Length: 137
View 1 (cartoon, one colour):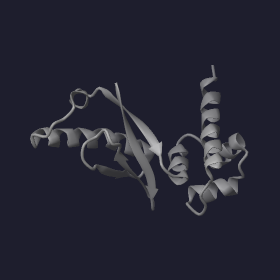
View 2 (cartoon, one colour; view 1 turned 60 degrees about the horizontal axis):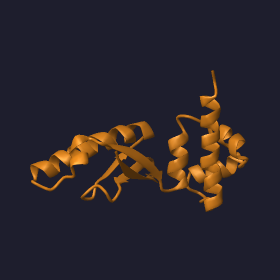
View 3 (cartoon, rainbow, N blue to C red; view 1 turned 120 degrees about the vertical axis):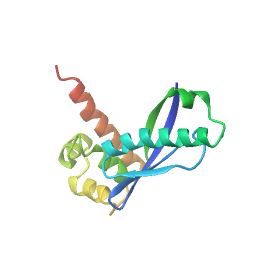
């Protein structure tokens, strides 16, 4: 199964995404929520594949067959934090990461940008929250 990377950014008040290099052509799509973006990714890719086939372009068989999965690459901390909104609050993320709520809020609003180590703490905090939820019986 092929993995299709979806590069996700936060632009103003929307998610903006594009497919990785294993998808021919330039494809960009937007959505207001991460759930909408995930739905839009499927629909946009299907539309793109249908268009390539109609144009007589060469399309890899795995792509035609739907033998792929999406991998989301949040390119900035703003997109990463907004993607987390349906599942965890800034307060919960602060407790999980040890990062001050106000600083997390600044990251989420694009006022400040975390260093790589700080971004990794945010990702690990999200994983910690997810693992705690998975442990519920």
